[in-house]
Image 1: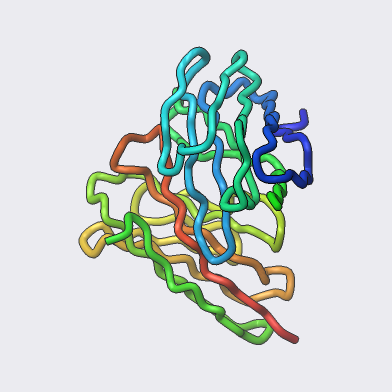
Image 2 (image 1 turned 30 degrees about the vertical axis):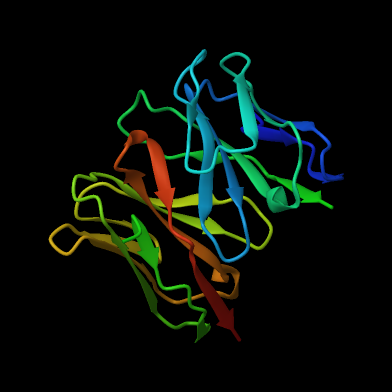
Length: 114
Length: 111
């Protein structure tokens, strides 16, 4: 039972390059989330998916796209990377069908855009 | 006003001390709250859930004050291993599918 896994762990991109961050969970959770975390700031929600087949924008969606491939997998795509997207990206999942809404996080992807 | 606000610290305390962090939230309809712990360059991990007036787990006690819209985290008998950033979390006014994370309170426990 791995929980939430993310790949890659580290990535360096040049401005304008594209890439996809992968996330998978094995807890049978219905909801999945992508956050970014910048120094001195809290986690900011980029996109989330309340169930398979649905996605919604969070607080900072510009410059990103997501795909909820199936119940287990939720990917985040940067189409044209910018230095402002240098950050640590965390994926999380939650079982919001229950009364508790705690989220469980993957280990993060550290992205640098030069 | 931010949905969740915390004192960033740092709180520097000696081993064995008792330390308390407060966190205020703006959504008066919120029913459940969480404290997460985040170690440097690691993912946040759930420390405690707070559903009613409070919750206790060993050396950790979380309390909820609905009238004043704040939650607190009390750590007794601090250990060196408690050094971390503690994140206060509340449901978004946009629904329970989303959580709002505070920026965190940094705790440093020294010998």
